[in-house]
Every structure is written in C-alpha cells, then in structure tokens.
Amino acid sequence: MTGKQEAMDWIKENNKWGHDGGKFLTEFEAKLDEAIQKQETIATTWIMGGGLSKDGSPYQLQWFTGFFLADKISVERAKEFNVEEMQIITMERDILTSTKFEDNKGSKISDEVSEFINKAWNSVSSVFPGSEEKEPISLEEMNGFKMWVEKAKSVSDKTDNDNEVIKHAEDTISIWEERKFDGATRDLKVLLILYGFAIVVKIITFFTGSVSNINSNVEQSTSIFSTIVGLIMLAGIVGYYWAYKAPVWLIDLRNSGPRKRLSDFFAKIAKRAFHTKVYNVTTYSDGSKTSSPSFLAGPIASFIIWCIYYFIFFQFIYIFTGYAAVKNYILYKR
Image (cartoon, rainbow, N blue to C red):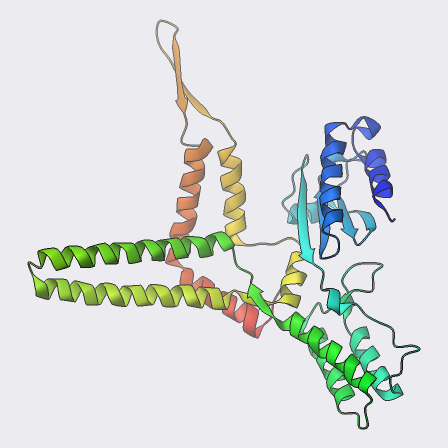
C-alpha cells in the first residue's frame, strides 16, 4: 500500500485497541512521520510485538519511499529481534540511491553492453519488495555483478553512452565495497576513553618524575615499559577498528535482520536492570520497616552488568578482533 493515510488506516484497524488506540496511534504516527522525512535516504522497518496487534501476532512493518508494507511474522522470528510483547523496535538502513536499476530500453547503448549490464543488475537481489532498488545479499552476487561489468568493459567499439552506463555500474561497486565500522560504537568509545586516560596519566607521571627525579634508572625503566604498553594498546585499538570495518553491502544485509552482538545482548540486560526497581525491606520487632535499593536492580545493577561485560571484552579483545577480521575480510559472513 502507498501513502501515509493507508499506513495509518492499517495500524488503526490492526492494533489491539482499534480506532481508540489513543497514545499508541499518536506515537506510531510520530514514528511514521520521522520515517517519511528520511525516506529519500533511509528505509525504516518496525517489529511490532504480538501484544500490540488485534490478532495477537507479531508484525514486521516497513516504510520505503512512499510504500508501506505489513507482514505477519512468527513468534520465533520476532524473538530473533528481541522484541517484547508490548514493544515496537525500529530499524533503519541506508538507501543507496545510485544503485537504482535503470532499464536500458530506448537508450543509445549497444546491444552487447546492454545485455551484460542488464545481466549484472539481474544477478543481484531486490533490497525491498516491490522496488527496483538492487543490492547483493552474498559475496557470490557481488562477484557475479563485477564479472558482468567486466564483460561489458571488454566490449570493443563502445559508445559514450556505453561508457557512461559502465561507469555508473563501477561507481555502484565502489559504494557497495566501501568499508564502514560495523562494531559496537560504545565499545570503540570506551577503548578511546581508556587510551586517552592512559595518555593523561603518562603526561602527569612524566612531569611529576621530571620534578622529583629521585631515582632516574627506575623512572627510565618505568617510562620505557609504559611506552611499550601504550603502543600495544594503540595497536589493539587500531586493529579492533580495522577488523570491524565491513563492506556496505554486508552491513546492509546484517541490518536487514536481527543483530546478534554480545555488546547488544549485555546492553539489553543492563537497560532492563536499570529500569527495574527492587528494594530490600527490613521489618523490626516494633512493626516498623525500612527499605533500601537492592544491588540486584536499578542503576547499580546496570553498572555492574557493564563492568562484567567490559571485563570479558578486555580479556578476549584480541579473540573478538581476530574473529571479526575473518568474518569481514575472509568469509564475508552475515
């Protein structure tokens, strides 16, 4: 279906409260308006928990350049997105505007080049149902597209129009193959903050040592050791950033479904703990009671969960980095 009104009509008919949805309808319309504002560059997907629908089933809702789609999904599929019964989660992906497939009929392109270029575009999948937007969903499709473009380039006596359509295909390949960071941004920020903190400590230690200068040999040894540690930390950060850079086509493929990152798993637990209130209640003999926040819930529990995660993260960071490098540079695994 097309248009905002059709989308709102669907949600009014199919939400748990019907046309009396009130706050729910208002909040969804706000989400829809935001998606419409960004529709030229962003495709938006919502996963709606079964507790919000009239028939009790979870749904996948999508908005893409004026089109709205609503598909019922299984409970198992909904669980993959970690959506709760009374929750809607939002996912966004970039629309690569230069990857729109264009029919060559009527254009002044040689038959041979037209055949190869059309085969190239037909070798990759549709990003969104009902659209002409194309993008590979596997390394095999990526290589297939490149093969057909190379065949088009090998054609002799090409016209200017031939070269133009070939260049467009090559530019598209460059967009698809551009690498962007696909790790958890929060982890990278923590690494940089800790490294910055270490540099500050190093500077303070340097100036403090220059003033005291009691034992120059010990200070020199400590300085060399801390420098080596600093270089190892820097190499670790650079390696982590490099390993988690993946081609755009692979990132878009991952974003089309639920992400299963350890960081996101801990983030979900920490968020739930943060918003959970648990109190330890003590009852005295005179009947009076006192209560105090429990360490099992609330901000303190959330902080402890993050501490556990980053303890694991720093213990195994080189294993995580190696796994990401293999996944993003060798196997191109989703």
